[in-house]
Length: 377
Image: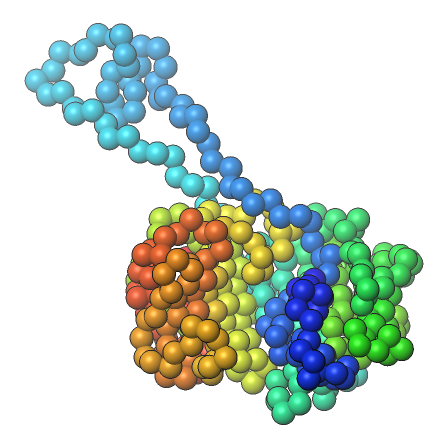
């Protein structure tokens, strides 16, 4: 929601847009893909700790790395002296993320929850849809009216629950609740139309303990219906497990710089969104498992797969192949009616490296998600 509200504040609608529906429709289309929960995580810790001290093997009287005698020690008599060992810098810490979950899809009345759409180290996100509510007039794609985020044990800080409002969002005080007999917190979010203050929608936000020391949140998104407290509690209580699900990607890498790895993956069925895949790559793991990994996380490379070309973009082209924009940390790969975008955000990768990554992508059948690959990079 932070991103939607920011777009409403910093990019006022043009004069031709004068109705609430126009504004809401514009926000839906602009932010259809993004997770828009507000105040849903701890501040990002963006640096990866790398050890700089190297412990010397063998102490006084012993051998250094590679079997070379330590300085000041007598050299053994031998017909062969090994060459000095080549210096090897300590590797970056590697904590591979398992992009799989046993959280299942379910329904509560007119609400359809899941399947899981985003996985990273520390949490899993499930979109919440409402029957009949789409991204806008003429669209068949459903609008995610809320997002459930299920955090691993001891990850979520309840003091962050709810966030702060602004001129178009009033966030009420905390109130105690229970979900499934366990402790929960609630806050009412009141959305106010930016063009007609008399038009309001009230949606209940929840944070609840689904297991000992493990919390989940249900946070509304802009454009949803009124969501009473009891209905929000029913959605939360319905959280269920099912068979293991892996999020997959429609490509393999022919080239990926050393130390870079996937830290977040999103996959969406083709009938749910035109944005079918998104991966965030980072040099080494992200230090804080509560970090909200999204388009504002510095130091990452974001790869997005879009079904349908977008002639509204300034760098638009429908010509098959790889197209890069010098100085923008940006490349696009056009294949059939799909567009794969690679976008750096202070990623430390050069334009040449991003281009090499784009040129090395080995695409699977983009239209058949059953043929996509597990994430092992």
